[in-house]
Amino acid sequence: MKNIILSVLILSVSVLSAQDHNSKESCKQHRKEKKEFFKSLSENQKEQLKDQRELKKAYKEELKRTFTKEQLAIIQNEDLSKKGKRKALKPTLTKGQKKIKEKHKELMKAEKEKFKATLNENQLALYSQFQKKENN
Image: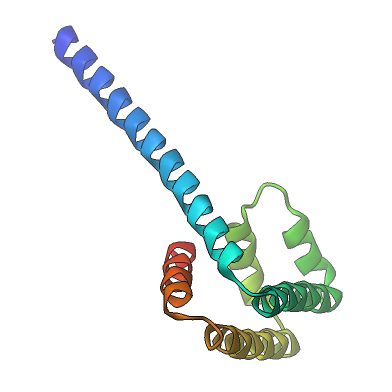
């Protein structure tokens, strides 16, 4: 009985170790592909992505300025993950904050579509792959 339990334990550790290795390799491959994608972009396309990052930063700052003390406490809570903070923050948002959030969502959607329109077929295929992986 002990041998069976020991065998199952060793097998489990081996499988988990192999999964972790595959995950690391997958991340390395993803980073490599993303690097190649960014190398293929024109200066204008790189500038568009930079502008999108700046818009995200400005949005976060704008939203943060409207936070109540309770909301600030939630985002400063180090015990919560990003997902946990988002989940805890959502029910506390005011109508004004929800409008800011919706406005930003629409703006970013338009910016992403404008960026996608500048991509060639190969770039578009890679970009679509990245979006799928990042949304999972």
